[in-house]
Length: 66
Image (cartoon, rainbow, N blue to C red; front, side):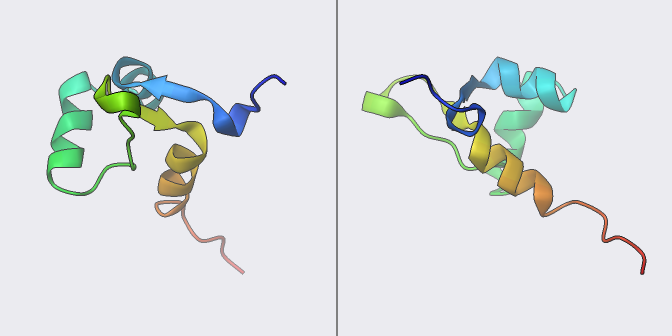
């Protein structure tokens, strides 16, 4: 079964590119507890689930004017 886009795993570099920020900004946000939740499968490379990134970004979406 192919992974869905929400199951996609992003590297730090891919996330930085997606957000259009320097890689160091990703580490800085995580250090301050402000970045998206990351995972380290088997203690390895830091990865981010696309669904976690999308949920984190949704917190910063402007509310629509009614």
